[in-house]
Image 1 (cartoon, rainbow, N blue to C red):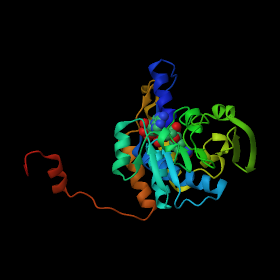
Image 2 (cartoon, rainbow, N blue to C red; image 1 turned 180 degrees about the vertical axis):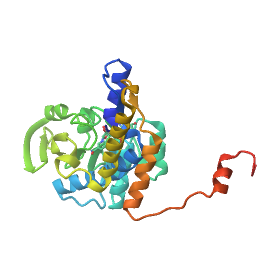
Image 3 (tube, rainbow, N blue to C red; image 1 turned 120 degrees about the vertical axis):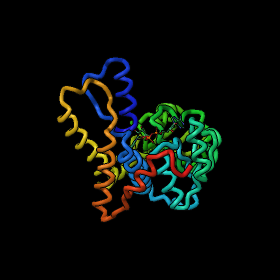
Length: 269
Ligand SMILES: NC(=O)c1ccc[n+]([C@@H]2O[C@H](COP(=O)([O-])OP(=O)(O)OC[C@H]3O[C@@H](n4cnc5c(N)ncnc54)[C@H](O)[C@@H]3O)[C@@H](O)[C@H]2O)c1
């Protein structure tokens, strides 16, 4: 399960609708810190580039949502020379974006200046009628978050006088005032629509969580009840260890003295 999946399964558990035990794989560090951040970061840029062949350098890229996916996309867009603006609804996440060096502002302000808009929120109608009315001629809209609901396509269609597919995965919407907006991949996850999703060498960590949690479930058998369980820390760490090993990277280990020191509260104070 990814971010939205976990949220929904937890709600099902709360409402008594969950019929079997589940593991919240997305919450494992070895999943969201890598798949969501570096996987979505790279494959979203890949999808938009394949669909449009735009030059990222010098563009104003608006990243809606500074979660694990959003921060990956922001990081990669900045690396390509874009001026990144983040929009958020969570004060802590917005503050992180500010201190990571991005501009943060309400989407209604960002709408007036953005060249490329990317939604990664898991939320609905993030880009809505009020934003479409402000967008610059030629603005590009893409979603890499949840389903096809983050960009309100029916509100966009209601403002549209003509629509045509200008190249695969790119629909041009002409609005009554003559502006053109470009919607990519019909508002569905652009990294899956126009590219190949995440590289295998980051999905391996997510799938290792699935495999090892399945094995754990078999071992635990009927002691598990219908509820959303956290991935056991030992499994999470083991995946990190194995991934490093597969990359030929070794790290240091704590000495007995260091272990003792880190666990004590009496020495060094
Ligand atoms: N494209 C992919 O391959 C891929 C991969 C992993 C996850 N996802 C999906 O991407 C979405 C985001 O995942 P995540 O792990 O980054 O989640 P997250 O919960 O870490 O981050 C989502 C962020 O969006 C913010 N947000 C919510 N509504 C907003 C709004 N109206 N305007 C601005 N910000 C808003 C939240 O405050 C939060 O900080 C989820 O739906 C997830 O399932 C997609």
